[in-house]
Image 1 (tube, rainbow, N blue to C red):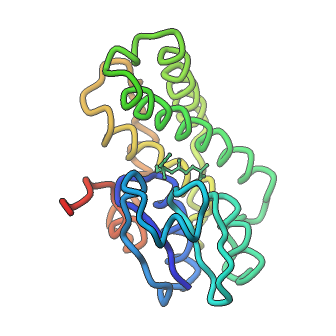
Image 2 (image 1 turned 90 degrees about the vertical axis):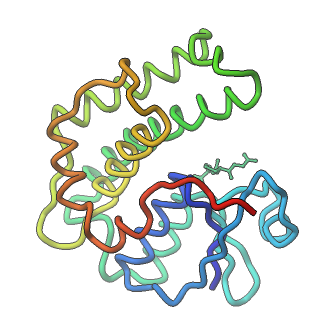
Length: 202
Ligand SMILES: N[C@@H](CCC(=O)N[C@@H](CS)C(=O)NCC(=O)O)C(=O)O
């Protein structure tokens, strides 16, 4: 199996953490800038987006949460759904919605410029991030002692992505409880190895 991923992509990071936590580290990582339309990525995914997981049979699975769904069926143990799947998925959805909103601001800047942030759509996306962070801060996902579940993974990916893309932004709410969760996982290999960083120059 091959995973096309980028080091800036929060969606790729969710899948990289999921693979590592499930012990599927034999999957070959293919570092790919999706904006450069690499032929291999385009052949594997008509949307040319990362993450894209290419199975040994040649079939591809795209979309981060569908990849996680496939991993759950392919290798159910250890599960990323904890002991209360609806609670985990509910919180993971809040975090992934905010990941989408934060990524939409970055794409909006690509389409226009930094003024996108203050546009009606930009402000709406920013509000989604603020609301989601505030909701997760009120009741953070819990580390239950086993492997981090999908709600923990998505929340840490969100917090780190917001810090990475909007450093020092005054509109980002303080989230001391989420920060503690991030700190607890910072040195765990699956999280440390996938921490967001700029893509190397090609
Ligand atoms: N819904 C997709 C989003 C994937 C996505 O937007 N990936 C970005 C990188 S963060 C990408 O490949 N962008 C290239 C493009 O939009 O052309 C998922 O969950 O995997």
